[in-house]
Image 1: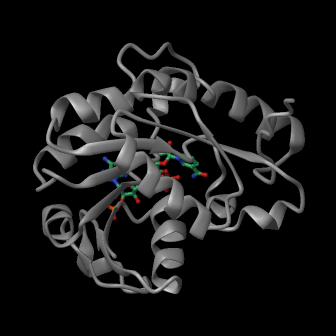
Image 2 (image 1 turned 120 degrees about the vertical axis):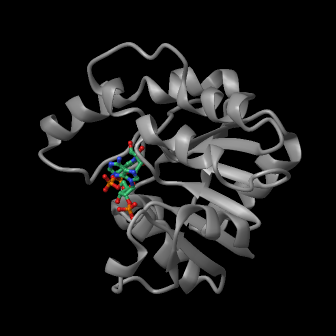
Image 3 (image 1 turned 135 degrees about the horizontal axis):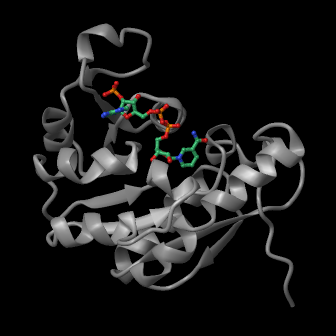
Length: 197
Ligand SMILES: NC(=O)c1ccc[n+]([C@@H]2O[C@H](COP(=O)([O-])OP(=O)(O)OC[C@H]3O[C@@H](n4cnc5c(N)ncnc54)[C@H](OP(=O)(O)O)[C@@H]3O)[C@@H](O)[C@H]2O)c1
């Protein structure tokens, strides 16, 4: 499949590199493509990357994501939204990012997932050596099923469908908890597991 991975930070690099490894056709979108020579796929501007992808992965800071994605061709495409607002760490979320992206781009299929998982575990969940869970939410059932399939190809077994994008608020409000747990554990080598009957 053709993926545009928006952003070349920790998440963009991890996801984009894994997608290349899995045989997908990847374009990285970046503000400064010429300076990013160490990535395993071509790096181009954001709108060029988006125009070449059938899927778009949002690995941008939440505060910048809508503005960048608004200038991209996204109609009919799945947007895998992994983003969080930086301010979610210590401030209330007024409009969850997943909602904001979907509202700005009504022709796209936004699916929120992986936003509370450390970048290295997103693409290698087995590295933790324990069962753990990933959440997913989206308004379009088919898009969500396709993203679930993608998650399975990344190694995820416990994929918890929280329903439509209303769940973005709950998912994005996990960030203060994530930060507190990182401090408690002393690093990002952890994730949540939903113990249930
Ligand atoms: N790191 C994690 O473990 C993790 C886990 C779950 C969710 N997330 C979320 O995933 C998103 C990406 O996280 P990340 O850790 O990869 O962030 P990061 O390392 O800061 O990378 C973000 C990338 O976004 C691009 N960008 C565009 N406009 C920007 C701006 N004004 N300021 C800074 N960067 C800008 C940059 O790529 P170019 O320079 O190529 O344009 C940058 O490398 C965030 O929303 C974050 O909350 C992160």
